[in-house]
Length: 308
Image (cartoon, rainbow, N blue to C red; front, side, top):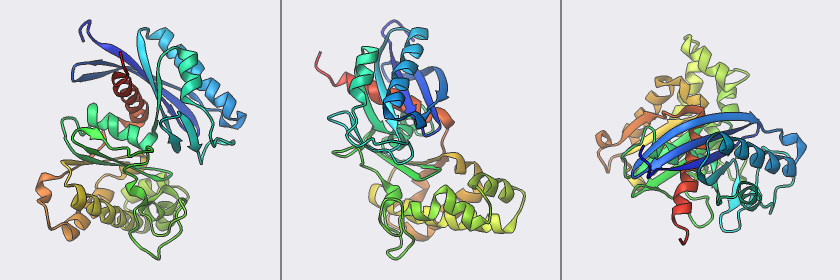
């Protein structure tokens, strides 16, 4: 990219690892320059984790200078205006009201902005990945939970508090199993990793995928049931949004057509008001780095909105 390009850092806070990415932006073009990760060490508490965010960002910026913004993806809820955390279910400690964007911005000397990790995943796929060029998108990332993101008019929709697009918490069975969010019958309650493992008779979702690929009938049936529930949820979103593309990522998406075919079948069964041939269902492209890349893009786009 030419001399008019800018560099941006993304930090993806996970329960186990803290990933980072530096991206370069010029015009409508985005390019990933570098990625890396360090242990989160969440057991050391919130102050240590926030310090680790700052230290990791500083090291990345020393290796890749001229970074002008940082985005932080986090697996929970936050206050976008205050830059504080509301709820981090999988990172130990009392996070309610904890400042995060401010301390990291002070440490790094550049503006810092928070984003939910699922929305970061979607933003990365929209700008650099499987949904490049799309105007509207639905994205799902399948793992410990079912993260979801929607984009309209080329922009990820976040709502007034960063929770916009939580399609994993739509009700698909009013009397279904209890979800971690407190509701019953959410898509996530049927299709998160531990429920898939349970349905497949395996210890983990990864084992379920491996067994299904080997032809294990219970594992294949369990994945098909998870695909059906995902398909119901995706069908609802397609009917509401008529997106150009549906992107599916996360570890469980490695099942490929063992999961995608039941989803497609459910879409054909339930979507009758729009042409499904115009809605692409595709696998995500950016893998484990999507959250950090998307956080960097978010930081860049938010920083561009600041007064000169």
